[in-house]
Image (spheres, rainbow, N blue to C red):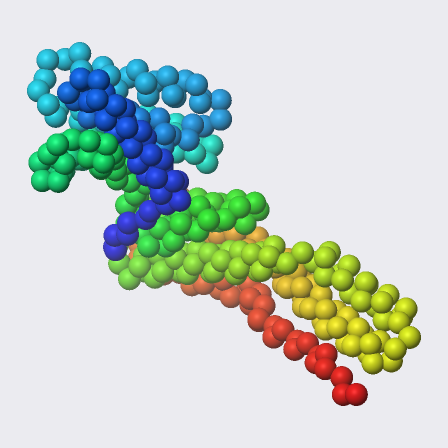
Length: 367
């Protein structure tokens, strides 16, 4: 079975990294000011805390609690007697765990695996960032100054934020499941719920199938289940594409423009001008018809997606029923189920063909 790495919520990570850089740069400014008043250095851990505070996007209702925790808990490792960079690494791990748990945005809490992965990776990369800061100071900014402090502390915040990328990575053993998870994260509304239901049903069906005896029959059954799930994902992707097209054009505005052009054509007395306005209204009218056709096609795709999810429901019921029989352990039973489920898939109506958009009529008039 093929392994697949899936990156979730990439936009959240990118925004957090930019904000963390700003937080590290702010600490760099403070470090430069402190150097002017006689304070020789500021602990690199401040860049981590500032980056976490700037980059975190708390879940609704947890803003004050999360920011208070980020200001206090990362300082706890400094109370233990340990040499650098151990306190800074532990501080970075604590900050990354808090951000992965309740600071990634999208009104969601991180899973335990995401929190652990982000904490370990960020804690490991903070010492790397500190080393980079030392190298930069030794080679390019030996006399200190504002620029050296900005670059150095920003580098620490950057390495910490890159470490939090581990909380966005998920390992899948099934490419179909990986595709469904990626698709679900990009959709919204009813289509997202249906894709989520498809994923749940696919996992349940696959779990029952893998309990059967290994052989050609079970392999055939797995392929049928994958095909059914892929067809549902294809419908969801097509629906999302049409949804994006329709949202990019306000159908009501086009309708209003058509009515306005027709009113102007009726009011003008010049024949050429009237002909131009009528042709313009006709062209927009054809565009309005095309939008209406796309809207109907979107509704058909959503209905087909409902039907495909219903087929997976029937497949799950068939598999659960077969699992309770003695014959379920035999390869012949798996092959028979595969044929039955394949015939269920053939009952579904085919996807609607893409309809060619009508070409608008020319608006040129020969005088």
